[in-house]
Image (spheres, rainbow, N blue to C red):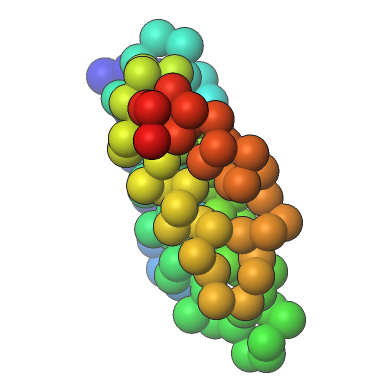
Length: 130
């Protein structure tokens, strides 16, 4: 068992009985840390961890009680999605990365405009010749 796997099991045990918001925040932070550690040696593993962190953030967002909290939560979702898209770019999976950036850009509240997605989309389209 890797160090992260052992820490993950211990974290899950520590979080038993805690409220869902606390659990998801702790798990998201852990998945982001694990993803960052894997990026240079295991990009597929990093993307898996980013996806798990994104899932946690979607759950955290369900606890939003106002428009501002919801927008902040979605901004965090998009930040994590962008991390995953960058890994896809490094793996030369430009089409997959383009789809992630386009999804971010399509936010109906304009949050995509606050991310680097426009520049990333333009660069990826140039690489893909489209």
